[in-house]
Each structure stands twice: as structure tokens, then as C-alpha cells.
Length: 331
Length: 266
Image 1 (cartoon, rainbow over the protein chains, first blue to last red):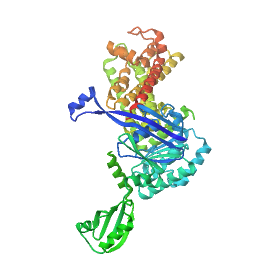
Image 2 (image 1 turned 135 degrees about the vertical axis):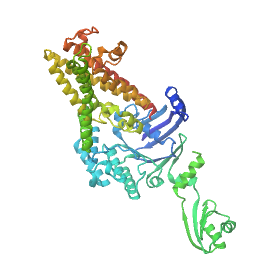
Image 3 (image 1 turned 60 degrees about the vertical axis):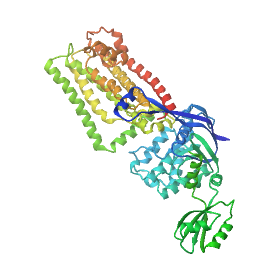
Image 4 (image 1 turned 45 degrees about the vertical axis):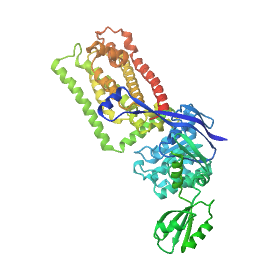
């Protein structure tokens, strides 16, 4: 049973535009000209209970607009959006009781006060009973290791500590759904791992449905069961990351260490089955398509021409896959 | 937890935030007190030179002045969140309010509680007490009651103005100064009897923005003053409700503003 059902959502924003200059600014006070911007152009998808889905797309593709509609902040121009059988913007209070939202770039904590004060205020805002609140908080404090800085004002926390507190703040009321908008942005490597680990655990142990928007492909690779890719206001592709990789980057990287140094022309001329994309010193990187040529054949061809000292075969980095995908989809 | 209790929790949070910077808090409060006090001394100096303002003695004007300042100080302290809403709309923090399962009005009021407004309050209150003791009329319980109710009505009126100002910030962040004409400008206007102004100006602050109901109409009854505008006495007793009505109306406009925000975002 799908928890999130989205059908044919459209949303057009009117963006005021004016030319530079003082006179234009004054004119803009009286009469504004608007450019319509089609942020969503018929978006449909479903997310089932307990799924952890990545929502990807370049900047300005419509990710934030979707998340805002799902959380009830924004009303679409047309289309259907049902979350746990509710229309978010029509039953705002009931809806937000069931969701948690983390915006990586914005804080929901009270800046000047100790973290604990924010949590207590949230307890009152969500009308949580003392027992439930204490249980949930205790669990979160333990898994996210917050006890050392519960009494520290938010403004003095490091970004990593703050993000752990943001996650806690959005989960105190035990939401069934969690929307994460770039939760690892700007974090150092260790904090990223902590946050990632936590998200994974939350999904697994509590069955929380999670929609994750991010530009960090390591997040996606580590976490998401499924990804949806949005561009130009439409869902352009959806499926398992593995399948997308296969479709858009069937090629593998074949890295060889040669016995001697060569210049590009020498290598290119002698190898026909793979494409040389990088050569430095005696290390050469080839791309090959395993459906056309097997690694064994390639190695055979290479060793016939050169002295091969070492070989490494790897997947192209996921960032590259996504970049190529955006390019091919022209978004 | 009920809305009222939650509001006081918000006040507590805001209060503690301000006390994180005690020196700044003390200086702001004292500064606020001094600025408003100087204003009254200006008025006093004027009377010292000219003796009276039309038919009005200084002690009488002190009542006008005290009432409007007390009402405005309470409104400003309690509903300052609406006054600063445009900042939250621009940064997108207003979204967070929509993500919480409580009334938006309550949450916006709780955004910021300005304790330093105690400066204006104190000053207005002192002037009011001074006026009461010097004005030389017989004070009765109904007169006190009428004044108290009118101050309450005045709070509602000013909060209503703050709400309207906040609604404007959903449309544009540039046009807020216009509203200051009615809030800060309203205080300036109503600190003396409104009868001394030109007709159109007086009518604007009676019928469009019922500022005259905060102190002018009630004080007519309290002082048994011959009203140059011939207002009937019953209007004096009704006047506190104009503020409440204005506030109720502003909440309807707020709902329209919210609807607009829902369809555009920012």
C-alpha cells in the first residue's frame, strides 16, 4: 500500500523580472512583468511504506517544489497528492503530525538556547506526553550520541553536531514519514557517516518511510533502495540505482599499469576494443563495454602489444554516471 | 497543551534567549525608556510655553498619551512576531511554522517577545498615573473600568495592525513602511486628542483605522469633556469593542494571506 501517491502534479510560478537600473526598479513598483516558470510539469510517483527513496535532479529541477507540496507548504496548480490518505494542504495540522522534515540548509532549532530547550518546546508544540517524549529522546540521544552537548546553545554547535540535533528535532513526534533535503550538505566525512548510518537504522528498525533529496551520490549509493530523477519538472527516470547505472554507464573502467611510458598515439593506435580516456606515465585508463568485449579479451589484446604489470577493473564513479545521465537527458 | 500555555512557553523561550545577552538587554531597555521619556518632556516643554493645547490641559493630554503608549507597548511586546515576519518569509523560515501542528497566529506571535518594550510601557504608565492624579476630576470605578477596557481594545487594534502589516509581507517585502504610518504614526497621532486634527485626517483615524476609540472617545466620557465633534456618549462605552472587531477582521485577512502564500511560496 503506497504511503505517498502523487499524480500529474503541476506548478507554475510567476517570477517577477525587471531590467537593471533605478528607473526600472521604480517602474517595477507600479507594474511588474512576470515570467511563468514551470516548476512541475506532470510529476507522478508512488512511495510505499518503509521505502527509502532518493530524489535526484540538478538544481532548479523541481525537487524542493515537490517536497514543499508533499509537506503541505505549497498547493499545486493541478494534480493529486495523497499522503497516508490525506491531502497535505487541506488537513495541515493532522498531516504535519505524521511527517518530519529536515532542511539541511536551514535550522529548526532555537539559535540562542541550549539544544534541550528546543526539544522541550517541540514536546509542547507536538503535545507529546512526558513518557513518550522521554523514551523517544533517550533513544535518539543514545543513537546519535548527543548527551555531551544537550546543554550547549545551538549557535555554538559544530555543523555535524547541529545536523544530529536537527534529525532528533524532526523525529521527536515519531513521524511515519521523513523528508530529508540535503541532510549531509557541508558535513565532514565522519559526521556524514554518522548521519548516513542513522538514516539507515531509522528506516530499518522503525520502518520510517524516507524521501531523500541530495547531491551526494555516496548518500544515494549507501542508502537508497530506489531513485527517482527529476528534470525540467518531470520524472525522467526511476528505478534501482544498479539498473540506472547499467543503462547509462554500461562501461567499466579498465586501469592498466604498463611496463614502459608511452605517448597517447602509441597506445591508441594499438588497442581497438576499448577507448583510452586517460594516460599518465605508465598508467592507462580505458573504458570498455562488457557486452561487446570481455575483460579477458581486452587483457589479451593489451598483453599482446604491451608489457602489463597490473590490472584493475572498476565501475565508473556514480557522480560521473549521474552527470552523464543529466547530459543525455538534456536537463 | 493549550494554545495559551504554549504561548507563555514561547515567551519563556524568547525571554531566556534575550537574557543570553544581558548587557544588550539592559541597554536596549534603558535606551527605550529614555527615548520615550524625552518625547514626553518635549510635550511638556510645549505646554510650558503655550499653556494648553486648544481646550486641553497638560494633565488631560497626559491621559491620552499614557493610554496609547501603554496599549502600544503591550501590543508591540506581545505581537512583535508579526512585525518581523517579513524577515522570516524572506529567509523561508516561515515554512517551518507551516510544518508544525499549531495555529499559525500563535506561532508567529511566539516568534519574538520584546521584553525591552517594558521601557515604553513604564514610561507610558508613569505618565498615565501622573495624569490621573493631576487632572482634577472625581474618579469612579466605571471610569477606571472604561479606561482599562479601552487600553485592552487598543492592544487588539495595534495587534490587528501588526497582523495586516505581516500579511503584506506575503505579497511584497518592500511596502512595509506604509504600515508604519498607521502603527508608529498612529501612536504619534493619538498621543494628543484627535479633535485637534483636520477633518479628513480625523475621519481616517476614526472610521478606517479606529484609533480614536483607544483613548479619544473613552476619555470624553471619563473627563466629562464637551466633545467638539459631538460624539454620543454610548460610543465611548462601545469603543473597546472596535479594537477587538478590528483584530477579528485582521485575522480574516491573515487567512487570505496564508492562502496566497500556500499558492506561491516565496
